[in-house]
Length: 185
Image 1: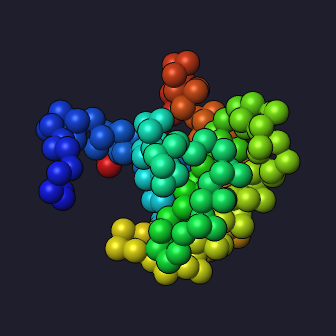
Image 2 (image 1 turned 90 degrees about the vertical axis):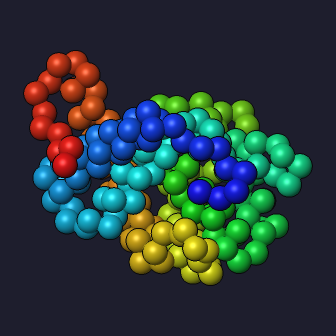
């Protein structure tokens, strides 16, 4: 924890841990057991992304230098062009995460996000693949995902979209009283 950062209460930390274990178990079950994807670093990345994106502030966490929240991929791309090094990598990675999250879990919302806006001509899947690849080739900061994981996210973007759609079905079945195993470790 850095100076000036908010302190987490133990209760918040426990909730985050339970939520992370839920997503880790569900992601592992969906990708490894149901889809046959035996790639622990990729599965870990996806479960961490889901845990992080539980909060809308994280989904829409990018801001312009003036503090304006960036909610469209077109604006995020413009901001990435204005940055260098690890800051640029962070934005390209966020664009990959943002597009993967929406196209994988909520494809019905993706059309709403794009309709009548700057993003109307942007293909989210194409941008997701492209931005993960760009992120993998830029200098990494201290807390960045490994280059090879970002490159695999680019190469396997469609599979990850499909897997996240299946993951959503699993948690919706669970909410409806289904009897699915969840590996909470």
